[in-house]
Amino acid sequence: MQLTAVAKGKLERYHRTCRAGFLDELDERHITCLEDLNARLWAWVEQVYHRSEHAGLTGMTPLARYQRDLAHIRQLGPRAAQLDALFHHRVQRFVRKDGTASYQGRRFELPYALSGKTVQLVVDPHAQRVVGVEDDEGRSLGEATPLDALGNAHRTRHKPDAVGVDPALRSGPGDRAAGPNLVEIAHRHHHGLPALAPKKPQE
Image 1: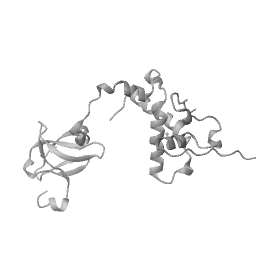
Image 2: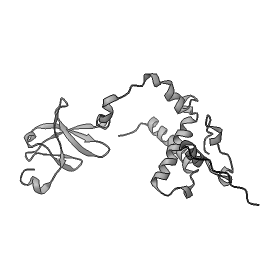
Image 3: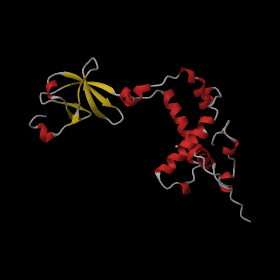
Image 4: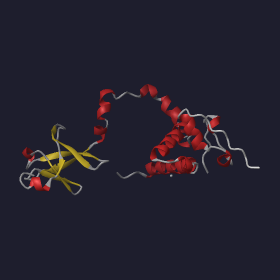
């Protein structure tokens, strides 16, 4: 999917904020696995990023902007279980005589009864795989599986000021050397962990 200049600008701005506010503050000594990194990223997003004023939101914080429209947000209900399917793509393909169709250079086996017909392949755009087959009306016509060639032969990242953040979560010049940095403070606050005592300066 090709992004517009505006969309690209928003992504680039977030990446710059993430690098300056999260990655530059990250203390690698606390990271031993991917789970440690993810826990600190989510804590920073929830405790700092979402509570900081954004110029693009006319000075509001993302959290306040989200809460303003809570009354208009509808629950998915039973459709939540089919959330991934809502983002599937459809691409038209002709089914060969051997009951196969191609997508992204790969061939998939379809129900043999569809041979010689034009169908809609249901595609997961993130996994880049075909997950099913439908007709033009959206009715399921069966599954699509990667081709078994043998079997088919017989059939087919300057930190912004965190305005609105809990004072306990603020940091200033020298904080990294004097004690836990902003990321570690946010991580412990978010997960209900006891605060770390600041290190005493060396005499």
